[in-house]
Each structure stands twice: as structure tokens, then as C-alpha cells.
Image (cartoon, rainbow, N blue to C red; front, side, top):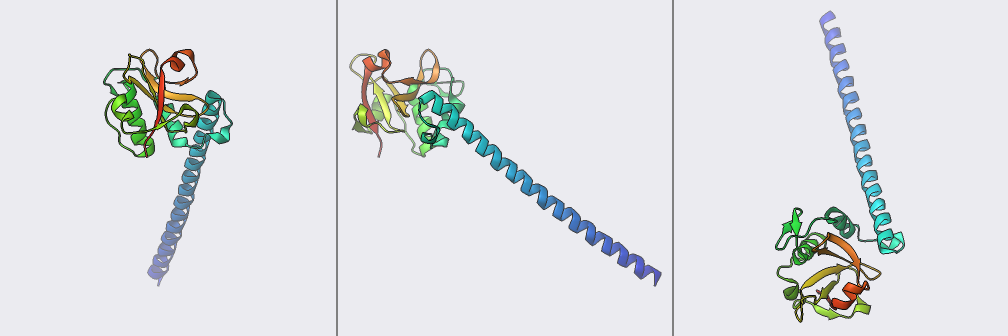
Length: 183
């Protein structure tokens, strides 16, 4: 009889221990998940705030967090002709990498070959995600960027790498050719 009481107590204790551990594990899992959600939300808010300031727009205008997070990761990456990664990248490869990562649209080729895949868009009708093309080297398109908002665009420059500039800055205004949009 003594054996059965001890076995019963042992089983009872094991069941209680199992329930306590299981409940504790589930509770901590929820907290981890909640923390990740808050972290993601905090990161999104920081991105919105940062790029609203850079683009001189209200924070609620920064809606495509995936786009601005991508830019944030690549900002300042140095220019390298033919480069395709964060150790160095050129303007057409940066644009192609951005488009594939953010819009899931693979692009390949030079700035002029990307231009040929686009529908022409006037400067006044540019929308976030449109391309901006420049003729810096004579009569051919030699530079590309991605339009953001408020006349600003992101691109890989030869001197400062990936950065945001204004189309109306004298240099870019002089060489701006056309906007383009892929359907």
C-alpha cells in the first residue's frame, strides 16, 4: 500500500511539474513574440522618422517601409563600376538590386537598356519607385536612380556611393533626361 501512495505522489508531482514547465514555456514564448513585434514596430517608426526628415515630408508619407529599410541598409555603400554587392556597386546594379528586393521585379542591364524597358514619365508625374535617367556622358543615358518623393531620388554616385539627392540640384537638373516606369 505504501508503494502505491508513493507512486501516486510521484506521478502527481511529475504531472504538476510538466504543467508548470509547459505553461511557463508558452508564456515566455508569447513575450518573445511580443518583443519582436515591438522591435519591428520601433524600427519602422525610426525609418519613417529618418526618411521623412531626409525627404522633407510628413512621416505618414513614408509608407513603403520595405523600400526605405532597403535604402537604409545600402546607404553609403561605395561605388564600384560593375559592382553588385555591399563592398561596391554601380548605379544600374543598385537599381536592379533594389527593384528585385523591394518590388520583386528582376531587372538586368545598363541604365540605357533599363530605359528601353520603361514607359516614359515626365518629371512632374514621377511617383515613388519610378526610375530617373540622366545623360551625363553626351547623348546616351549613363546614369539611373529610383525616384522617392519630393524631387528626391536614391542612386549610387561615383564619389559618395549610395545616397539620396534632389533632381533640382544644379548638377542633376542639368543632366536629367526622363523618368521611366515599368508596368
